[in-house]
Figure (spheres, rainbow, N blue to C red):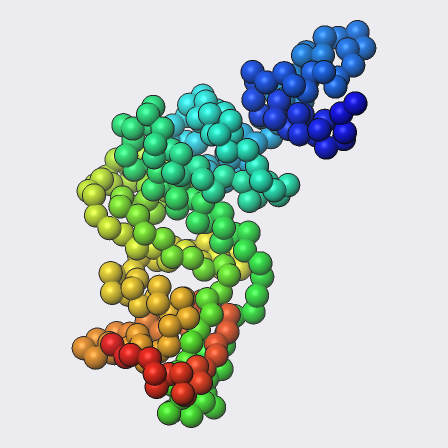
Length: 265
């Protein structure tokens, strides 16, 4: 006699694999064929997961149309079933899946738009946390400034793309066909800072060096290791902007003995 775990495993596998009939052995017909009864659940699960993907990727949905989106979503679900019960966590692999999906090959920028949308989704669903106030380091001795490390705010993300995904995203969601048609799809690296604010999500393009500095700041590298000799004024201005806009959640100082042993650029 199968255990409850056996039944749950068979049902989960059969729901996500239309050709798998292992769950049918556990279903009473009761006037309907077991397959017909089970297909109701299978279809409801598919509809729910497609809706979750559509909610996370609205611009992708509009770019490819509902029929194409449904088809690629079903193909994705078959290969990437949910790993948690939280639907807002579902779909992180979708951009890479789109990049390798043969029917989407003509839309080379589509995966980058999806990557941006998932980054927005992550920022929107990030936990709340108080932002580090700009004057938090006011009492710190000048000799300790170089040993400061920052912790990024959970609602801030960095993203690197190859196409102007931010411009495409805005134009599509605004329904601005003229703006969409004017976008030049030149292949060039673009660094985006995505941040959830009180009533919106903002995106900022960063210059290459700004993105590099920001990435290191968010990785917990000390200020002494990051501050460039040639562009220190630009770096300080960038750091001040991050602090002013609440992009850090906290800071610590590296002990002086450890900092002395670390190389400085």
